[in-house]
Length: 157
Image 1 (tube, one colour):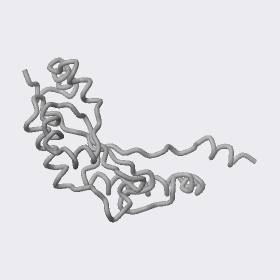
Image 2: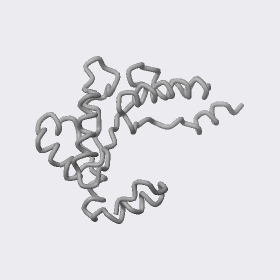
Image 3: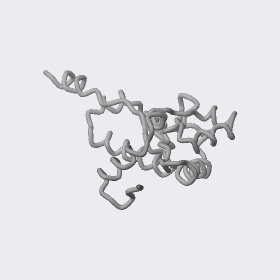
Image 4: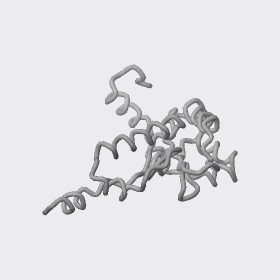
């Protein structure tokens, strides 16, 4: 049974009951751009088989901050359609990317932002980054946390 109309908790429970142990393990797998570019048919076979749960969208230290970015929204939409419409369970992939100090707009590195002692400014910058990244299909980002212990220590007389 596919409980697509139930509560979130019941839908999760239903999905987990229908998943094999192998499918659960495969959801932890992540594929890179290189694997897609070099072996497209193999890549799509594995998407259809539910063998990857996510894809990392970074091939360099610059992630989304370079003009040569590999992020192709049409390609991501195609991959997502295959995952949802052609796999047994229809689980969408999570697209991940490093956006440590920006996506298209580049902000100061996190240590510099922390040195501003202005959490509101940091929040505004990171909100802009999140908006840019999510508008291009990025669901999951990696970014360092604010160094609260440094801020507290630096503010002591």
